[in-house]
Image (cartoon, rainbow, N blue to C red; front, top):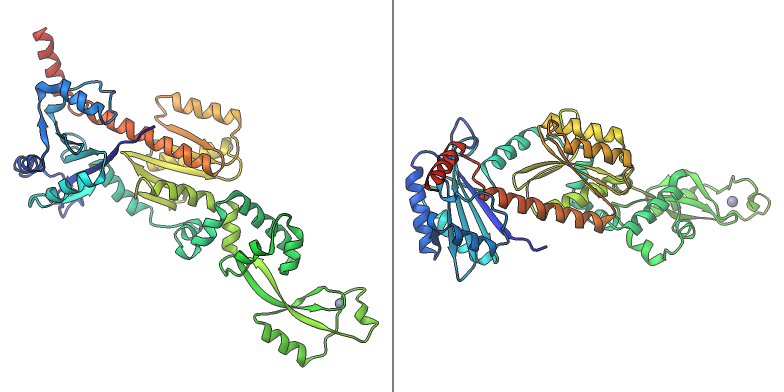
Length: 434
Ligand SMILES: [Zn+2]
């Protein structure tokens, strides 16, 4: 599937009462200036009598599904032939539409940069923000209400943990860390003990992560050279500290059956032992998935709020993309009926209609049936998308979601649905002419 590049700006006027305010005053002259700028930049306006032409131009940008094409009433279309850019200016009345909303469709980013620079030079343009009016107001709401990060959120946004996340985004590596965590359950272990318990794992592999302080806590303990066992009663933070303790007192191994009790030799040495950090354990046991999703979201939108609290609800992610406000639930364990009701409740508390469930496990068919019922019930007004699989599959399915949302957005953009009154009048004239 080929994606269309687009860049959108909504022009707002900043007022002291509301953060974003429709740009009403002097809108006409502003529009005139925008038009003039377009023409200067080699963009040609397309008029009402060239619906067919507009359709033809839109086709070049993969937009074919145009239901009603009464564009000019509140939409203007500009094209440039040489460097394919299609610019749609929408001005509107009604809910959140008292804005000038410009959408660029383009094949090369360089082609629109030049146009943007000249648009931003227009004096009357108050605030140029990427996104639509609806998105901007929702963004403000989310910024105000989703300030508290959960423990997972703090990990995700901690730049120092980047290396652990990168390592644990790999399934095989997660398995290794999981094995190490079960080996170290009863206390820290030496390098040799860890290595001997994991198959297909080399000293080189271990060396790479073992000395990373974000992964492992390293302490020093006494090892009896007779029975080779480690005494867990004493911990030292450095080798020197341990050696000093050994030289200050004569060592006695208290392990059952230790030959040192019979023989006179009481040799001992200081060795390094390792245990996983709290962060590494948390990331392995699920936070990696939230990070993976957030990374993918950031490729297409900067409006993402990972792992936040909304009142008492813990949210895995909320993001805005093409006028869709989406709540995400990530599950590295199985997703059940209760989880479904919980996420729907959270979405309702936020007045969000779109939900994406990301899970590494298969979802039970009863839960899938319930999701289908939610999706088909118009009164529920909720749309749930399930994405299941491992890393690469999750990434691929998310990409498909974005492509579809993008296409849908572009299709809707061209529909005449913003002013019913005008639409009826046109339809009437049209009938009369027939
Ligand atoms: Zn011993």
